[in-house]
Structures are given as C-alpha cells and as structure tokens.
Amino acid sequence: MSQTAQLIDTLKRILRERKITYADVATHLKLSEANVKRMFSKRHFTLNRLEEVCALANADLGYLMARMHESSMIIAELTLEAEKELIDNVKLLMMAQLLINRWELTDIVTTYTFDEHEVTRLLAKLDRLGIIELLPGNRVRNLVSRDFKWIHNGPVHKYFEQHVAREFFNCKFNPKSGELLVFMAGMLTRQSNSHMQSSMRRLAREFDELCKEDGKLPVSETYGSGLVLALRPWELSVFTEYRRVPNDKKF
Image (cartoon, rainbow, N blue to C red; front, side):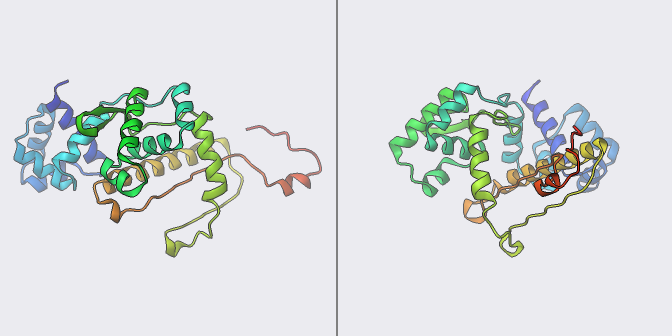
C-alpha cells in the first residue's frame, strides 16, 4: 500500500473514532456527500483538502503522520528475556515506559534524573531490545504499537502489579483532586459479565485516545494518570466464611 493510501486510511480511522460522518465532512467542505465518498474511495485529496478535513477532526498533518506510523508498527509484546532485562534495571524500565507512553526525550531528561551518558546507554539498550530505533543525535523512533501489552503474568506485569497493590490504592480518592474510586458488587450471568468486559475495553480505548490527544500538549499541562479496571467472579471472605456449605460454583 502506498503512503498516500495509508495516510487516507488513517484519516478515515480517525474520523470513525470521533464519530465524524461523510455528511459532516461534506458540510464542512461545502461539497456533496457523493463527492466526499468519491474522494475517500479514490484516495484523491489536495493538500488543502487534507488539512481542512484534519481541522474538522481537531488534528493536524503531524498527528496524522504519527498515527499512520503507529498503525504500521507490529511490535505488540516483548520476549520474556527482554522483560527480565528491563526488571533488572529500574531506570531502563522507566525509560521504556515513558517512551512507550510517547514522552519526548527532552521532557524525560528535564523531568527525571538521567544524565547525558546514562541516557545514551539506556537508549542503546532499548534499541537492542527492539522497543525503539535509535537515530543520530539521540532521536528516537518508537517501534511499539498503541496496542502494546506487557506479557500477562510476566516480569513487568508482576512488578507493576506489586506496586499498584501497595501504592495506587493508598489514597483517599477525592474527586476534587482528580481521584475517583467506584466499587460495586452484585450477581451477574456469564452473558452480563461478557457485556461488562466489552464496556471496560471501550473505556480503556477512550482513555488511550485521550492520552494520544493530550500527548500533543506540553508536559506542564498534563498529569500522570492511572486507570484501573477490574472485574472478576468474587465473594468477600467474610461471606465465604459464613456459608453453610462451601461455594464450589465455577465460572
């Protein structure tokens, strides 16, 4: 597929994400909907038209190119050996996580205590692990997709799990401070459980989209934010303790 075709397909994907229809584009461009459909099907856009549609989607050409680049990435998971190497060096793990979250290198070294030689060594290791491509002048090309996941129950997953359990929930969860905790319990069928899982995945995608949007802003205007979504067939231990007979029902 040519780069032009990839670019237009990426634009279509952004419009779908933001629920912008061909009719909306037609109104914005003062064209007929049929003409707009033809432009997209033939992938025939002038630069001015492309910029106008990007503006409608509250994006720009730089963002469009970045999204196109991300969609061409294929690295969605590291090897077990690579994750073990990250765990053995906390600063290497920090650098990897920040770059995966699309931090600029200048913001990383301004915010955290990485000296120049250390940065070079860490970037070289991340390049060897396949997380980034290190370019001249310590410029970085991210090689992981937005769907990147740490290995389930792997070294990094367990590391974060331990810290989430101890640190994340050590909080009063005051909504005025940007904090919120919602806990609910009830009885669900397998079908309702599946429905809730789908809803949670949609919310996770929305969180990711907002992260990508806000990633275009200066670091001084954004806040590191954690979102935990969890669902499991579960009963509080005190309820289990007072059951007349053990609950052997399996999901």
